Image (cartoon, rainbow, N blue to C red; front, top):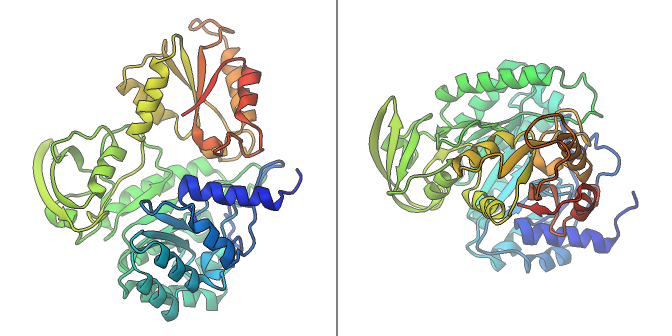
Length: 460
């Protein structure tokens, strides 16, 4: 694939700003993580390296950000290779610039924590309204060396920086890509407990994903390890002082279940606990976790009916600011998105086929059941990721090739209903697989799927 031109790179940067309110700073990274998502990509996949952006370019991008949404820095959510933001030589000046332009807008920064010195922590406090996501991965020098290539000095500096963060006013969550096959189960547990001890709002235990091009010895028998991780987190979460989440969650229902509550938070003091189910929140019955979470985010008084042990209790507390409750919940499905899917299905005179990722299939099935859309109107079809292969199962990494292969296999399968070869009236595809112009990671346009499948294709 030919290299991207400067104009094309600029378009990716502006798209990330407009679509996701992301401010890209640099693709430079000072870690050598064994699980790096930018390694082992198959041929033809678009990745965008932006180097170290100038203050002039960054200033120009600010005009495309929305002051009413959280501004994200350092999070890999687009084809742009997001490096470690603190490696930018003018990082402090960038924060001050952003705060001058957006005095009240929350900033969310993802970092590996190596640069958490007295000076940088002070800058973050001065910036104000900053939330950090610290990809700690391990709280031991041995674990950090195995996972991130840290030297003893780098590990010591990072762990000391976490102490500085704990003593500051900065809100932060911690994350670890869990590879117990390399570091051992004790290291995973001790890292979660370290984050809780330092006052993390949550500890995210991330299950690693590797393409088929990765060395199989790096993460052998992934399904077994994934199952063990879920059981491990299930045992660890109730005894941790901070909520412990596993990602991806792979939820099998839409029940608004609490995954965890930060000890000492308003919801904790009110009596909310892990595994509680919200029946109503301020008089409204949440249809799923996402709807409950969005309601609980808001500042102000909360009156909630909570179901626990076959008993419903009414709990009250006040969120002093947005996101103050201390409650964490796993992601299931956005109700607004469900309504868009429902409208698309009901406005179509025939049957719709919904192509889903492996991770999203169960949630989509539950949503269709909730909306009482049977397979005669809306049939979900799970699509395997053959482009990346391995353990890659998310919608954001599916390509036109994957969708077309999966759709053709479904269409040609044997079976009584519907008749093999009978095309649906339309195909609905997850929007995460495409950029704002409709191109996938191989820079193939969604219209190619429509042309090859011979049916209208909608992105939802």
